[in-house]
Length: 190
View 1 (tube, rainbow, N blue to C red):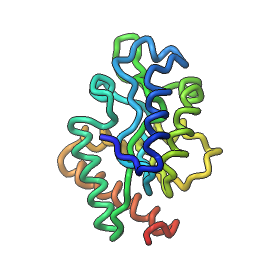
View 2 (view 1 turned 60 degrees about the vertical axis):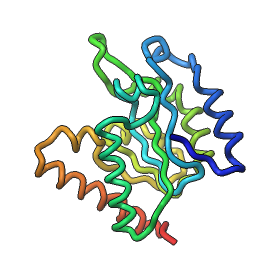
View 3 (view 1 turned 180 degrees about the vertical axis):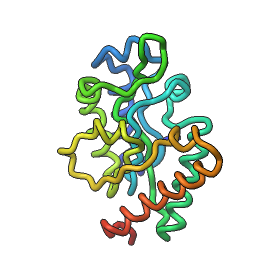
View 4 (view 1 turned 30 degrees about the vertical axis):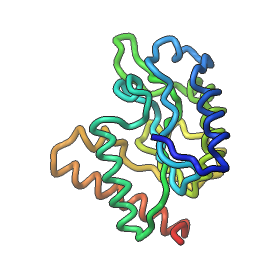
């Protein structure tokens, strides 16, 4: 699900067409689909993970299935707590799923992230976010520190889902607090 304002529809469609068949690195040889983005452009907050997982790669959209529900809860709760109904978008540092020799997910290498950097910079220029939320330590590790967006790092959805129920609630509350705190510190809410 992608929504672009009228003035950005052409640019967002051109972005999607330009990167949909990318052959920029070896990840293209093992992917199911290029996973670009979903949400709204322009937006106030971009949530970035390091790479698509198996399900996202199969469906072609970031954060599907159980993580989609969790991200939805995270966004709604952050909007409620900050008293700001911000517009959001989701994407990844790389748009193809990196796998190890056994076909399991792995974090993208710095080289893969660098090669996918032009696509990410183009997307962020379209999105024009006031805040970038880095989902997980792997996203924070490969984030280009030279990009001039305010950032906050919080738990990746899988770090929340793969815990006990009490830990899930605690990590979700921490993630909401991280986002709300960043909104307040950077004075982003109108």
